[in-house]
Amino acid sequence: MKKYINTIFKHLSAFLEYFIAFMLAAGIILLCLRMAFSLGNIPNLDVWPNYDDLLETCFNLIIGVELIRMMYYHTADSVFEVLLFAIARQIIIDHSSIWVTFVGVCSIAVLYATRKFLFCHFHISDEADENSDTSTDVLKD
Image 1 (cartoon, rainbow, N blue to C red):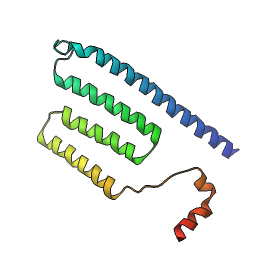
Image 2: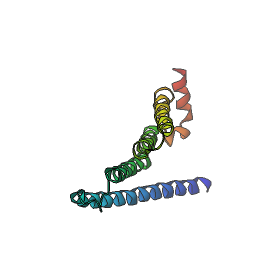
Image 3: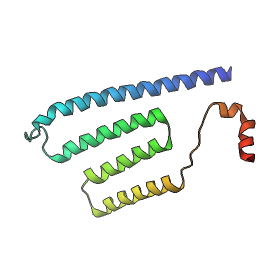
Image 4: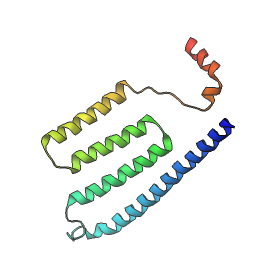
């Protein structure tokens, strides 16, 4: 019974995750279309008062696309890319003190160091738990 309930929750959570990703994708597509139609109004400073607003909107859409990829692929690389874009957006859009920028650059450096030295590539599958004896054969070789 417990295995049956776990299977139901696994499928339900996967369905909800894909549904949320789909809704996010639909929203991003609509916002991209809205932004594309308003690009003709860039000389009109009432619509886009400055370049920073346009840049902020583009970064937000890019981060949204990366969130969709993160929900779909479930890899450490996709999480890395979301964090990288979010930190880069904060550095570029927020024109605050030099120390905030320095902390952002250091954060990106730490992310890259983590990616280079601490990421291990492994494949997670549902069959790995069932075939635990085959995983010990790999360790012996």
